[in-house]
Image 1 (tube, helix red, strand yellow):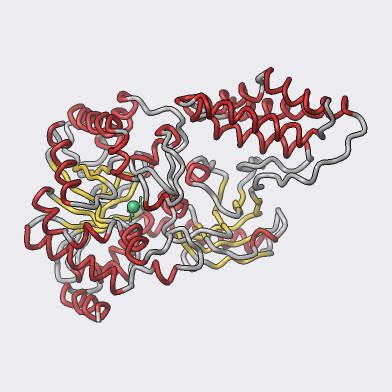
Image 2 (image 1 turned 180 degrees about the horizontal axis):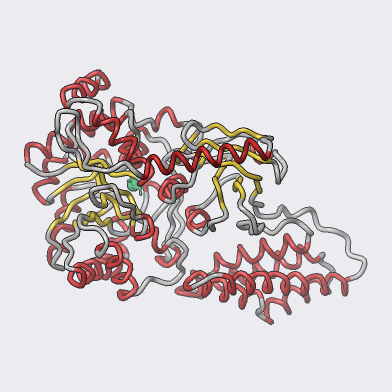
Length: 520
Ligand code: PEP
Ligand code: MG
């Protein structure tokens, strides 16, 4: 399944998963096992130290902190002790890390938040002891196609410039990994069964539009793919101008971004600034000043910006929030609901947005994710306006909110429909599921019906209602959404040219006819 358009070709490298611990081994020489334990911890620390030296800013700090944990003399003493008592090196490391993790988690607060880091270190140390490839992102020193069972949003956000394309065995089209790939303009294919069985170094061609992955290309064929991809990128980069139908009905074409780095010319503003993407890997809360700087960087470069307050949860955990694990996280404390347990987080963020607006002279629109009831919309609206934010809205991602769109608009200035979550919650199908994609298909009439309710409410209230889910960037769906009455479409920069072309080819009445047909 292609999830991020574009083509690329090159040698593939698989990302190793966590090592599987074999059954315990009978130990002949406990001293040798203790020495192997020490060597593994040293190797992990040295590797992280090297990566820290090559990284910058926040990433470098995190890597340095991890290297220090791997160097902890108490951890070494514990693991060596277990080895001398007769455990093999891998099991001694596993047991020592597990003990330390539990001790940290029991302390609570900041230290408990670091407990997850220990798992990563443990996997690395155990892999070294077992002579398996180090888990984590590869760094081969040349461009490559990254192949993985699955990737986390944090992995994807941390990808270097040497990654040509992504292919994963699992994942769905609206998973946040797919969204991040699209934001970076990186061709990506998900749900590609069997790709992890290909050996590293196989030259693969990836088409992130059609979802085709061709294995065993010659160097000549790979070079041809790369040349064609460059030419296509140049052609698309030249597409400009406001969005609209053939008969001049305007439809704002906006960008979905995760940071100022995703801004590109050629759109009419930002329709969704996913602020949580700035802080995916953080174990400590971003400060007010840091937030002001990150928001001001966007506000200073784009006139019309819709900022979404932090949307944490399910596949986008924000470690610094320290939220407890949930059995059913997609239906739990996520998005605006985090405010119920940690109100200071939203207060600080709204203050930071207001300050960044003052500093840059911008007038950002601000919206909350996962709004469910009119009462929640009213509360968010009041809080944001108290901070001096003038234009306040909500994402429509929960069917309950879509059904009450008219009432929500009494409290709010605009709505933005998040079709990714709205599909997940309407069809009761996990958006990351790789075999339920028919149920997540945004062309499903039940979803279109909910969009039509929102658009109608917007028309009656005279307020804008846009779509910022991945459906907005689909050139087949975009005219249909316009036919349903939405006023703007927000998408990754790579999708804008094709959507612009699709709209310009049809009149508003033709878009409406498509919408009617789809609903029927
Ligand atoms: C959505 O749910 O459609 C949306 C735009 O938000 P996100 O994909 O970040 O959950
Ligand atoms: Mg969402």
